[in-house]
Image (cartoon, rainbow, N blue to C red; front, side):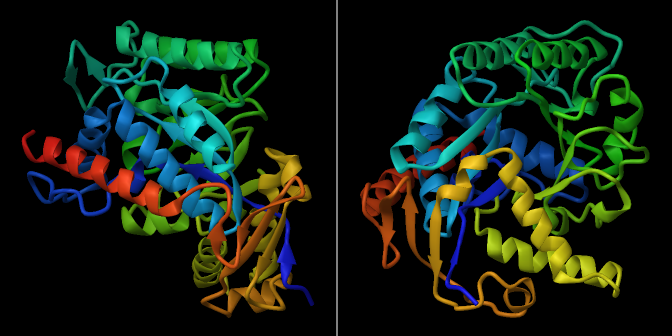
Amino acid sequence: MSFTTFGLVCGHHHLYSSLARGMPAPPVTPTSFMSVLENVWWRLDAALDEETLYWSAALGAAEALLNGTTAIIDHHESPHCIDGSLDIIKAACDYVGVRSNLSYGVTDRWSSEKMVSTVDPQVSMTKEAERGLHENDRFLSAGGRGMVGVHASFTCTDETLSAAADLAKKHNTGVHIHVAESTDDAQAGVRLQELATDKWLLVHAVHLQQQLPGTIAHNPRSNMNNAVGYARPTRWKNKVILGTDGIGADMLEEARLAYVALRNDDIQQTPETVWSWLNNGEAFFPEVRTDNVTWSYDHVDSPWHVAFTPGIRCTDVSLNGTKVVKNGIPTQFDMAEIRTKAAESARTLHKKLSTQ
């Protein structure tokens, strides 16, 4: 029985999504996952600039910390603001005090300022993909903590996928990639089987049809929101971690939802399985075990209690012996300022989207 845990890890985030709340309705109502990408997320990616990058990351990181999440694995894309983008996100996370593992999502879907939805695997790598690879290489070469980001196999050429895998090997790290999130990427396993290693982070894997090496990042809330299906992560031998895919970073809430989805699929499953997914994030950030998070519930260390107890709140967080959250209020930064600046950036971003 305890009020405390170690720091939690969000295994897959899109921090820029914190400014998506309240964004203008898409030009057409999406009727499929691909149309969600085309009409919502890819339009948002294209509208990002340096200011929106910083304040979206600061807001997302601050909200994570206030929910007991002290480390984030982020996957980023901003096709018109690639160079230096990972430094901006890192600066925002550092300001808040949240540990980060960053990557830029390389893709060939942008070509000469024009977006395409279908990429021929056999054509040459685009200049935009080259820039994305360079951003990953630059950040990692400078000592940044991260992986090589790839959007997904279905938006990349074979040349780009191979180059990303080689770059990851160069830096002794993995590739952070969306894998078979929908049926549009059902061939991901075939295309990645000769490239993937145990260091890779395989995000979603809902429609994955064959075993791949790497860690699976399970995002049940996002999968439901996008109506792509249930990933059934227990069917694989891979280690599984929990992510949010950009829908905040309240990892206890994500764990509760993950358990309900798991139990709905297999009544023999227990909360211990999901608790292991929550704890597996420590493999990417071993130092979270030195963090101390205090909660409003005295059985927060019990999977069976947490699974059936909504409303558990983070009250205090200590990092490296310093209390950074006290009674639910951050001590090292001004949350009101972050919310104000983020709201200003969101208004600018949404205005830009409304004119697209």
